[in-house]
Image (cartoon, rainbow, N blue to C red; front, side, top):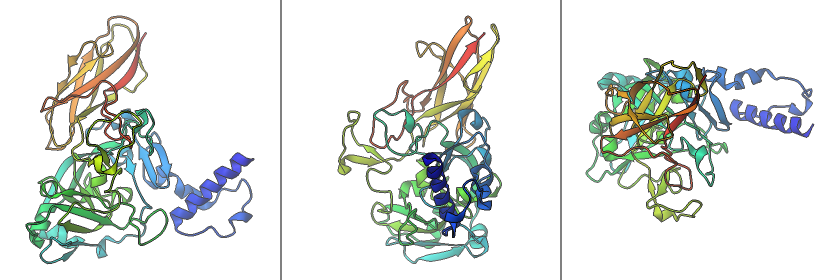
Length: 406
């Protein structure tokens, strides 16, 4: 009985948060009554996600894919992870949407309508890898607080928009500009309109790269609401928190942006290695920028069973933040030996790269297939969890799947 009341309380709280109002007379609801709004709180229907996706949190919504769901070369919406910090905005009108560029390092602040952005500036399309900085957090020990992502908080969709640098050049930025910060219209979980759930950004060298977009389309269609409709920043290769959703303002700063979740420990790691569980002072933590080299086996699904003497073809993706991936290898003997995979070049910079290999197993039994990628600077994935950090960021240990040969 206590468990049912607890679940009921959680549901009613989520429903009220989602619809933006208290449920009047909720105390009068019959014990087993299912409110009409409940169907709208089904995240799979709400966000058009596959039911194989895993919901980690509903306040705010945080949903990840399983490795085998990410087998597409370009990630479709139904398999794309959701990482939110606040409440998703509702009733957004693209026809009246504007984007303001301001800040102390802008010559003259300027506001653009969405139509003006689309027609004034050349449109570009890139496949861009976005990965949550906490992807893989569930493997850290001691455990790190936060959503316990496994491996599925990563995607590589096709984004269309205008280059941020073209818009900044149109506005005119001062020589003292060092950072940009984004601002969106999502609501803080407290409901306080004066609090931003998140307002992060990137230094000017990242803002001015050709692939950094103010995007309005994902995979050829309007960006889905959960992923930032009608306008979002996309800064591929960096933690996805740098790619703000629902943006209506970008501020050009003469200092490192100091918005919400820019200060330690958010999206920062110790500047120098620390012992597991060690407390780290704020001044000893550095902002995460380019994500580390990583790979993911997307076929077959972990737990696959094959017949003896059968050749198994594996495939997957690899990425390395701002860098290209130089090679990908697999191991079936727990890392004792490694064999090269066939690796494709990226479609464009900051897109993940696809790999495949054909594997023959020596005899019947249980195996694990490990994948290991190396970036063009010769840095490869560690076989075990990398350096511990308080927030559980940047886990790029080798991906592993199980296979049984019968």
